[in-house]
Length: 177
Image 1: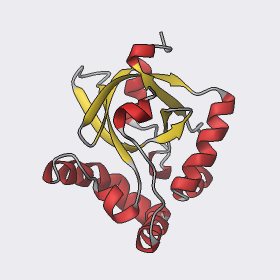
Image 2: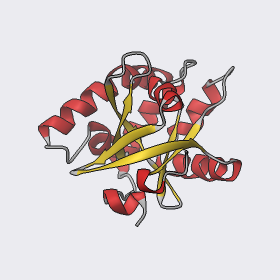
Image 3: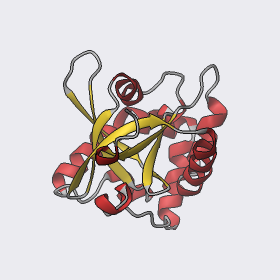
Image 4: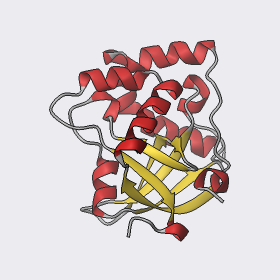
């Protein structure tokens, strides 16, 4: 079985109101607001719904998974709600950080220790992260833009650094080493 199957992960199209929220979220003010609040609001929504929903899923139609990394400095678990982009049965993550210049902390944590867990609704699966191949990266960027068009706007704003793409695969098929 694939990671997507193990998690019961599917992507459904956003409705009109959710697409409007996505347009705002990808604007500079929206990206600033969501970049500073989304992970906290998603964590609160996850707690209130027993792990069934995230704020991003409800208001923007964005399929979110919680990726729990190990803090590279603290060694503590660091859960982060992120958009999981389907790629060949696995899930990919894009390090856009809402279009900001800095690399996201979750990315730096996964580079330091590629072992993590991914939770979607009531299922948690151990995973290993690896850098996407060039072909996977192109596929992930195109798929991500279809799920959330804001990624294209983030990519336009990010200068001075690459946008990393990591693929998460089931730890039972540990391809990252």
